[in-house]
Image (tube, rainbow, N blue to C red; front, side, top):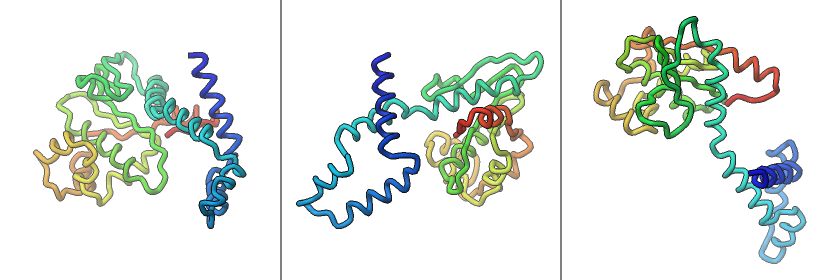
Amino acid sequence: MENQGHNLGAAFDSLSTYLGSALTLRINALEDHFTGACDQNVEGLLKNQQLTPHLFNQALLIKREIGQLHVVIHALGVLLSLPAVLEKGEVIKQLSLGAGNAPDRRYDLETNIRIAEFTFIDWKGRDSARQDKLFKDFFLLAEAETVKRRCLYVNSRSHAIKCMEGKRTCKSLLGRNANIGRRFAETYPATMLACEYFRQKRSVVDIIELHTVQALDANSDATTT
């Protein structure tokens, strides 16, 4: 494990040194550098730019080791939010912090008084995949067979509401998950829009903006995604 950590650190150092702080500018420079290259000079251009199989393998190592980083971020976000979420006398019954958990762990958090999903989304503007995730969480909470309080915790309530009031069809938003899509189709028309579903269910699920993780983020210069 120690050697693996050393290799990963070395790979980060190499890529950071090579790419610098402005990745887009570096990529643009490489595009310009190789424009007009041919079979007779391309190897020399690669050597000139210090582009080697070793550098490529280091990038693959980093991708393999941190490919599940989003799972780590989600787990940490949920756990760090618990002090702000739990009320006096509230007891955690189950947590589902990562992908591939047992099917009976249906929600990120279940306590004696609530079920909850957490979505730490870094909204970019073109957010179709992020909208899908948010709507899926809302749908699962809204359709749950429970008398417990249903809570959807987000880091931007305004963005969440904007998504829920959108004109995309629910079928499109749930299309990444076949099982949930079928579950929706059993009850609702294929043409139903997100805004129409939200209008029916908005009183069922509390959409709550979390500030705890954002405050930690501001103090540590980290970025929540």
